[in-house]
Image (cartoon, rainbow, N blue to C red; front, side):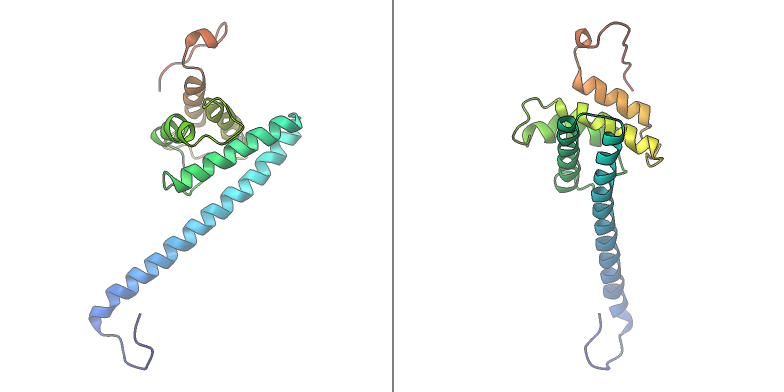
Length: 162
């Protein structure tokens, strides 16, 4: 930023100050988003419990969503747990998760199946951002990624591309 003595900053030094300020603000925003992700996971687990899901299911779904949020951050560079686009969901579920699938999971489609209730949780708690991807669009996309073969859908279910 400036020197450690009392030398005044010269006009050319202000660019470096602005850059450092932006870097600090970006780091704070990233940390706040990561903290929010941890908070959401705790609330999500409570939400599943209140919805009377089985303990094993709660543990599995929460673990998968935690891993997805971590991959979203580490691999895709998206730290905001409330930011979801079609491209991000597709990449996360179809490419990143299968490539880095955690031990104990044997079907990469688990990512899409387990992310479905997280989308519902975000919607129900009024945290889902409607742009660029609406909640029902995200659920439709996740359903189509989990069950790409129409024979798996069951009677009366129709998935239209977004």
